[in-house]
Amino acid sequence: MDGALVCTPHATHYAIGVELIQEAKRRYEEDEKNYKPLSVLMEKPMTTDVDEAIQLHELLMERKKADGDSTDDQRIGGGIGCFLVNHSANFRPQARAAHELIQTGKLGDIRHVTAFFASPLSWIFDDPSNVGWNEKHGSMLGNGFAWGQQSHILSWIYHVAGVENLVPSKVFCHMTKSAKTGADVSHAATVICSNGATFSLSGTSLLPGNAHSDPPVGKRIEIKIFGTKGAVIYRGDDRDPSSGKLEWLRGDDEDEMGAVEVQCPDLGFEFEDLDQDGNGPASLQCFIDSCLGLDYYVGADCLTGLRSVQTIEAMYRSHVSGNCESIPDTIEGS
Image (cartoon, rainbow, N blue to C red; front, top):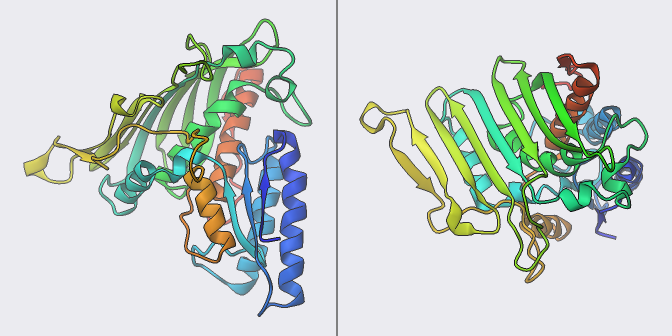
């Protein structure tokens, strides 16, 4: 077996992930020179339990720490070909271009993010039969739109801005719930990062329509990332590529101050990769490339998945307590 796709209910991801990592480690320890790597593509969210997400990350980092490896090579954990989380929007060319802008310093230091996500999915969160989407399992304090949808936009932000630039430390959030299922259907949150950067996050499933009707009603996304030298804006309808572009607002050159440069000019607005035709989403192609031993793009690794889990879990804690909730910094090197 070259790889495994984990597309089971959210609360089962951890146990399956541990088994796969342990199998990959067993292969490596039996024959370090000739072992057969095992790649993993896990559906989002990575888990719905912070402790489980941390343990997955630590298992993957074990061999890397032991070897003193400081590279970004994803072949970590002793025998893992790759460990990717299927946040499909992160593997789009637009996400890669935005990530490159920030990593090369074009925006300077990231200081603020605003993000809005609206989905026409009330029919899911109002239906009691959709147990996996709406009912709490294990240690979950709630279930609904935050776990099912907002994990997409959080992962995009953490990947594009860089997990090293945005380390969440405090969260305040209020949610509204479905009267039929008790699932959360809307929320507004403020996230404070360890370096003082902030972001404002809101989302709802109350957009009229159905994402799976014919024709489908698109999800509406708006993300703005502001740095000391510029900003990135990405917004649109994910069923209408002509509805938006990836824009870089320059603040790094006095002669170009405020100028807008469109990135990926041949592409419009694209977010989740939902197409059923062709070779599948780019996230799947990266997973296959890893299985084949080829180079691949890391759009969402375990740490990106963990940051999303930490933020969403703190959102639920804040809603329950009515207070600002802290996120312990338990990840070495974060």
